Image (cartoon, rainbow, N blue to C red; front, side, top):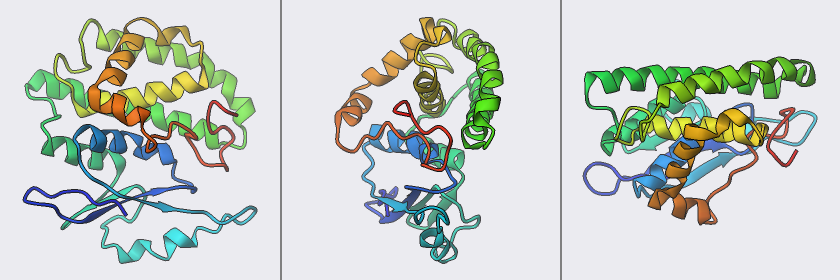
Length: 234
């Protein structure tokens, strides 16, 4: 269980992610990075699948209906009376508490657009990596990836961050999605130039840099062992 502070004093709460399960562990990585960046104390509740071939999910299923979640799923966050699922809803909740959201109408449009575009990219990658036809589908995925990254590069342009000069929650999402692609295709030329500079700026943020050097940080595996591809170590 992951404790997070409330608005008035410390409120015990919970944040659950799967250590092994059908929900990718990396869906929670932007949440972790936001909590670290905002100096939010937390504890992580991990749920384990049983061994193959059954992969028994009962550690999670026996608890999921007891947490008071409207839509029981992983990851979840409990902050006092606030109980959330859906990774982007959790990310937005943390961002609103710490002024990491867009401010102008133009910035909000860019933020909304990029959030949904990144989710499309993330889900396409998840479907590929968990597909039993991974090897068959991989060439088509690699063929379309450069165009998707080029679109991100154009959208970023010469801006410091994706909505402009202000760091917002979509930068955490963007970094995570691009970092996964960098692990999947280490020499991807589209992840050079301004996208590489963006990732370097993000990694150089004091709180993020400290987190990435800490024992708490886990870069891999991206997915659990039942996926056809889990990390760069495959």
